[in-house]
Length: 233
View 1: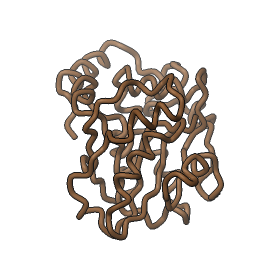
View 2: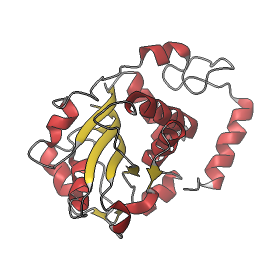
View 3: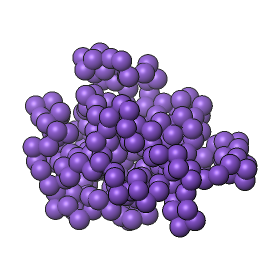
């Protein structure tokens, strides 16, 4: 996926004049640090969910969508480090932070026996209009970062969002499900036949958006579907 060249140029120009700061705490970064300082990397609130079949993410989908496995990399709180990181990625165009976060997501999960058979990554899509406005899809950036450490296939735009849904932020689970139940479409099922697909998103709250993706994929012959997010609220 190509980043909007105007946004990329502005970000690069800003980097000439502004100090590099940590995406978790806003401290200045040292030369060897990427987008997170060493203190924040050490303090990342990892969930350690990957090998627990009864973890909180998996329980969100129990009885609603059939999954091989589900997990999240980090715990999310509304005033914590992870909230600041995701806000920078989505609203401040910090694409390098998204790539580093994706790489750390992959390093954390790729050795888990429950995810070892994953052979394709599928980012949750944005509606094309919203993606044009933002300049990128943050879930695709996470996938791009994951593939730096875990070279499995990336289906990219294999799943498309055909309905531009309103913000999910202040909706309850039923409202969120009504909001997304017909939002996704799979144009070509063939590339996913007999594959173990890992759906990747930035944060899971009620699971409604991810459930909408899973239900679209369930008719693909031989498919196994798992879910992995950067954070779990």
